[in-house]
Image (cartoon, rainbow, N blue to C red; front, side, top):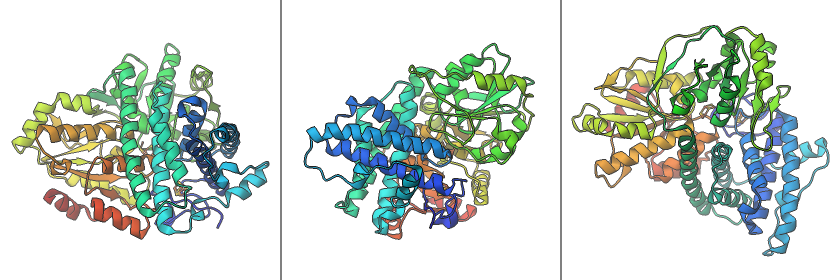
Length: 547
Ligand code: SF4
Ligand code: SF3
């Protein structure tokens, strides 16, 4: 077997990609990503067992977040960048090891904490021995991977917060502890299940931190109409989740005659007051990530990826217009690095935009969003009244990711067929399956409330906890709220674990359950938390309405 990866929903046959990723990842990239995760785990053991204070090495913390983020689905396809990151982590690990040895508690270092490689061949040979299948026991493997994927999602959100100057040592310490634990053969399945729950607990903390980072800098999201048409100026499309990059791009494009449009998970940027002052911040272009193959062709201008999700461009005319930054990367596409103050120079993108034609319209009109916790709680009286009078019977949390599987048409049909006295609460790119449907409103409350990016699922949890308080309930599960979540990559894993930690039961996950759940682990999740898959739309709606 050349590679093995089963971290995302589109894994081959629902079991694992073994030749080439369905995402387009090559065998070499997949294996090097495994080695990068392995080396970060080794470094984590050094920090954790050596009792090194996380505050003493901020640069290492940043590179650990970056390394984990680089291995998230559709973030980085660049073999050279991943190999370079492995070298960097090994060098940091050695430096920390020297310090750890002074404070050494007689730790037994795992191979991950001591191995070295000195050539590409050695790296690739080592990589083939350290992947997911190196853990023989299927249940332990399943739990270790669930923790690892949750930590990857956590790292992604922590990196966005860090880019805005927000960090939390407790989160870093947990990342090291959790990753080190995945190397520890003495831990039982029960102990790993407990660690899965603690991963969820820290998932809540990291999303709260990112929410604070976003809202303290850019204001609270508010109800906003977003243009989905185009203007007749050259333009840049910005994709991914990093709002700091968007801010810098908007500042640098001011007065240049170049417009800026959001793509996919960047859409919710329009909801923040701080970005509304930019006249050239025109609207959102296109849909969820997987439609970029055609939509980037008609956009005509350059595209900046601040994070996942990149689809390897088949068209050379598109590929030469792609730029990456942060943890994103694609071979042959320019990667923009920050200076020592975190400032990025986007001049090459702006200059390219000026030479290219304006975007071609693919849609027109407006969509509405901005229903994060602050905005919804400002409408709380109206919402509570609508529930009390029975005008709203049920809320459906349909946050998460979109993906290219045809089975995801389920979510469009589900939204269309939901009874008229129900409201959808959404976040993440899952929304694109129904956010352009005209589902109307209930007494002025739109039937689709978009809180924002996938990390803004935190907002949905805050709203649910507030409603629980207002209705005087002792259990979040007594609220008229159902959870029907679409997942794809590892950020959805941390969102799921956060919801489980908050005590949410009976979450349905689709379009398929994770391939990384062993039969026994799936059984635990079903028995303890009522987790289930999806079936036929009509039956599922009937089942949810009865809950
Ligand atoms: Fe396969 Fe998903 Fe892994 Fe890509 S990220 S190799 S599609 S499981
Ligand atoms: Fe989407 Fe990639 Fe997950 Fe942030 S952009 S939700 S899939």
